[in-house]
Image 1 (cartoon, protein in one colour):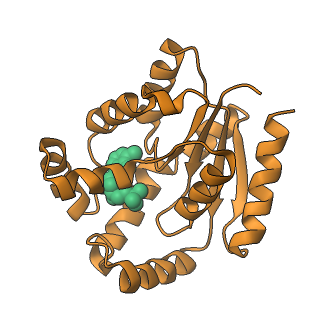
Image 2 (image 1 turned 30 degrees about the vertical axis):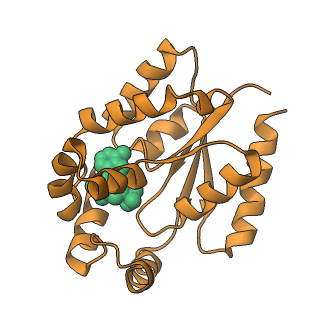
Length: 193
Ligand code: AMP
């Protein structure tokens, strides 16, 4: 099968990280979550972590350049040779264009974009639940509102962008986790045919 480069797209709280982790385990591919990479840098108090912190704390997107460099370094690692899953990247049209540029240099391309969506009240409810369980610093009500606003303004335009390219597969994230995952696996199996 051709190298799989999968993009997981959707608003905060939609559950795309859960689906990406399940698929990564099933396919034995690296799960590259830019949010997790930034949180790791924050924890280790690196220069990148310090630069990203003010944006993350405010519910804002980290500047494209920082994110693109981070991802380019990560996908250059050996474990990405068979393919990889990008979760939470790209998040702006500019990031998607930068990704295409990096991928072209590597003679790769996006295989498919898996897009998860759910009504706003479901997202807010889920994030509130996650905040109680995980205590994520950016899950406070004010930051969540800002993150959803950022999503609508900056990330939303990626939906028509990838749909026009014929890459978009949409999933109703209100279904049960396992039911969604079955649909995800079906789509991915078809990609290999
Ligand atoms: P997430 O865990 O995906 O919700 O990401 C948490 C935070 O990390 C976001 O609110 C942004 O501040 C930052 N972040 C993660 N991925 C990106 C990205 N692709 N572009 C810009 N900022 C990002």
